[in-house]
Image 1 (cartoon, rainbow, N blue to C red):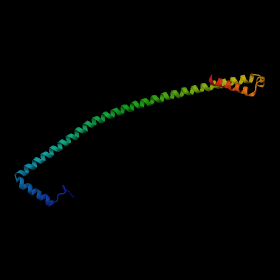
Image 2: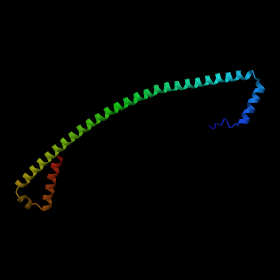
Image 3: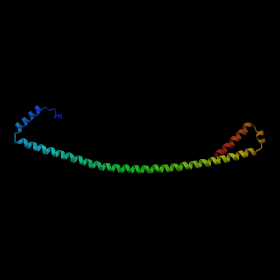
Image 4: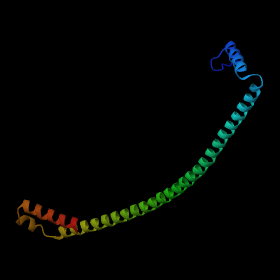
Length: 146
C-alpha cells in the first residue's frame, strides 16, 4: 500500500514530530492527541447525525412526492378513461347521424328520380336545354338542403 499523507515524505514527518515534541514537551503530547481524538470522534458523530437527519427528512419528502405522484396517476387514468368513453359515444352518435343522413338522402334521391321519370318529356322539349339543366340543378340543390 502506497499512502501519501499530504505530500509529506517520511523525513519531513519525523522532523514535524520532533518539532512538536520540543515545542509542547513529552507530557503535553498525549493530552493533545487525546483531545484531537475526542474532537475527531465528535466531528464524525455530528456528521453522522446530520446525514441521518437529512435522510429522515428526505424520506418524508420522497414519501409525500410518491403519494402525490400516485394520486396524479390515478386521476390521469380516470380522465383518460372518461375521455375514451365520451369519444366512443361521440363516434357512435356521429355514425348514427351519418347513416340517417345517407338514408334520408337516398330516399330523397329515389323520390326525385321517380318524380322526374313520371313527368312528361314535352316539358324538356318546350324549354331550351340550358333552362332544363338549370331546373334540374335547382331541384338537386333543394334536396341537398332539406
